[in-house]
Image (spheres, rainbow, N blue to C red):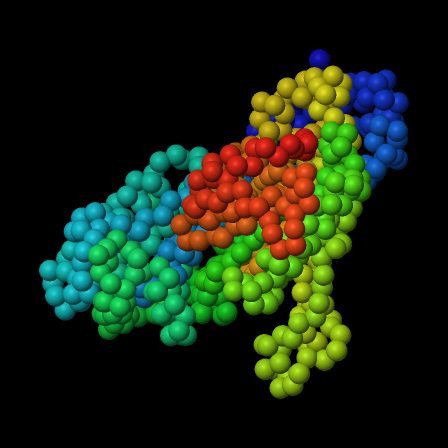
Length: 563
């Protein structure tokens, strides 16, 4: 009896199994038999494209053009298994170091399977010597405080070493989140970690814009445990004094004197990036991510397409149009976008963006959204005049097109392969073994001739890079499988939790990513009654990674199955 093959934990049917499925499929539905393809192509060649099949009665509008294939190895396995990295943050206080460390840690954990942990020197200082320390604690001319800060550094580095010497087979990345403002300190850190870490990379954040630095202080520092019970003005002044103490001894990474180190220098939140000795896939992936990351607030709005004709019949996948209820939601979403996404808290107009997949149901859901042309202030400053009539679609010289549609094939729904266009009941009856395997592990299960959630995670990697670069609100009209992955990433969930997330129809999810966690709010736009102009029901909000309140409020929305 043919045995299925395990590739990095993902079950892929053997050619013999596919022949059995093909014969059963032909017998039960009259579809053309499948031709087994090799698991790996000949050396030096790429995988052949998935064959499209003609529509049949059971699946009249199949997903004929599946999402782009990725290389077999990179699509199902993680990079650098067993390697140990240390990412050492460098820079003055309030330069976004913790934000950068935590966001990069989140990205590497979710998309590359790394075991990441952030070791923050401030946490060790508060644990060892208490939170209520004034700026005198950071005076480098006072030996007592210099020694205490060194104790904090030693304790953190000891824990970093212990973390790295754990699982020998696991890709591990430790983030040492501290100022590390002197060459001597950086040399000490490097010498302590030699022999334990395979790669040590320094990441320096520099802000030349004093307004941006003060904004960071007001946004995150005056509310730290260090200033509990202190008024904001006094806290702000004390923190500025702390920064001044560090400025007295600050030595930025030097391109000649520290040429032997691997480092990334981020200037003004990624406006300029300088690299030294950065090579290899994963290090350069970090560089790309950090080049897109910035320190400004972000807003993301996620919405599934309106109810489709396949949703009505409980079919998965396909490329069907919207139902009447789906059209109703599309109009409600257009009003929500105009009244809420394209306007700020006080009603002022603001730039916003729109993404969809390449499938009909998402584009039909977006078709009622308006696209007025706005004057682009940055463009006006560059040209020294008024916005010309018309536009080129991206704010390049002729104004900004509000909610200009951008279509991504990477946002297409998880491809169900030979099960595309079937109901779950049909899958359970026709392919009971496949149905059982999927139920056992939805993350790693791959539909025959289709995709797994891990495959989807890998093809959404570049999407997240693009999202991280945006500063304007972004509305994504997508599919449940896709939005589950994006939601899990931004909410700080383990990727194994992604297939379990609730992304109901007729609902908009508003996410506000932050350094620690992500705030969430959900809006049900239609629920049997057409909402009045400008009014939409908020059905829950949560902060951080606790989404129970929002999900619990949304359970009354009846949801058809998805991949």
